[in-house]
Image (cartoon, rainbow, N blue to C red):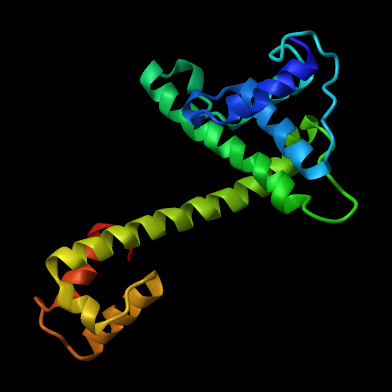
Length: 199
């Protein structure tokens, strides 16, 4: 495969579900983001007619190993499949973070795949990613709580705004300050929120 053929295949490869991606697809996505940002193709070094044998795909394979749990290689295939999907999603977001956030403006830019292996970059991304995932988890739990309230205690949604943990804390403070009955819709909501670990 020539580099031109590789670039021709990129749109088809990266349009597939990420559960099918591997280190070569991640490299292809990196090349896609690079070309989109700089209006120029990323020149792959030491091209050996096999996209899996070049430095760039090896960098993404190495990144996968770095981000994997220590016991990854000893896990059963089902557990590996779940972790692999999560790691591919994480590296996909790491690539986006590099191009769309970290180096979005100014003279500095993403110059190669080795940048993704720098401990300072990995650590900075890890902090932001964990924060983002915690926020997503909370938003998902709030959505479940709202859905539960719509089906079980719709009155609480007529009386109170419920879109965030802050709203939930206000409802809790309201229930406590007015000494509402234990079976009031507010207290039922608070108990469900604790069950869902929103509060």
